[in-house]
Length: 423
Image: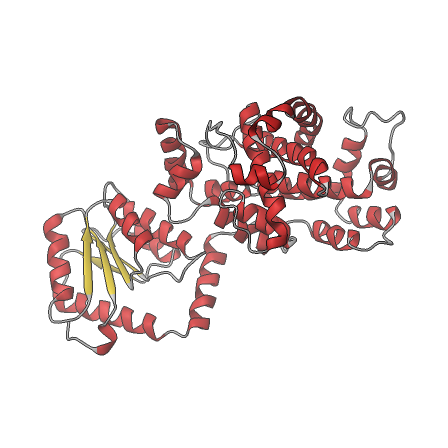
């Protein structure tokens, strides 16, 4: 390929398990140009390089370590699109597999090349892809990325009742009648609010027959928290489920985290109902990963189990992004409050975008760890390590004082598990 000024700084990654074929392609593309071409022979190497370096183009065989690895690599690059501009991807294969071609194109693969290829044709195609991609305006590229994500990750929508209630409760003069009217716009949510109001959790002396009565007896903020949880259950219930991730155990953990977060909130001056919702939602990114990237997600689950490490560690090593980023994208797409976006997107990193959300993020991080230590549900691993010391200190606790709260946590978890009946 003739050298051009635009070649400067351009890096190409070739994922090809055959060392000779990979080296030949790298030599062909790098000859007579200032392109930097790297060749790797395993998926692990490819993922590592993609996490460390920005590439202008990725060329992958359909089989790297095993069959269809190339498609899995494309999925990883797609996930990376949520946090960075993605490189275009070309696939090479010894076979013209129609199903692989369709799947690759659906995922955004730019071109498909069959071995043995014509060297000049390959160089021409690569140059064209690099030119088209490099010339694309940033705004147009962002729009293209967003469109691809929208097409491939068919994100579930949440009931509009959730956002309407959130906005209503921001007003000081909201009434129980008004809250009940909004809830009744979603008959499914309304029915489950009544079911919960008449459950043993609230121990009311008479049967509650209307949503207004339920709101009056339970309280507007508590009802709003329950509506948010139910809306999330409904949305997540509409996405595919793999056999490798137990959703019931996952929701037990999420609800348990919410219950503990509510207890912690009362002790440090935060809103207990907001903390409950934040705890329930904190791991929703895992459901999206399980639904739309089941093979990649399963590998992370298996690694966490086999090596007895936290799921986050396995996920960070194997995947280009974590469930925090995926969850942030999801909750943001729902238009939920910024505090929830920050909790979902930073409950491990403890680095929310807004400083006024730091304590809530720390609180949910601590609640998550406490729930694991209680053995309530399961969210992908059996990690029972203590929470981050800085997060504990941020909400006025130590490891010892956290253990002292265990009876309160157990009582709250038992009470809030009634939410499982609303799944």
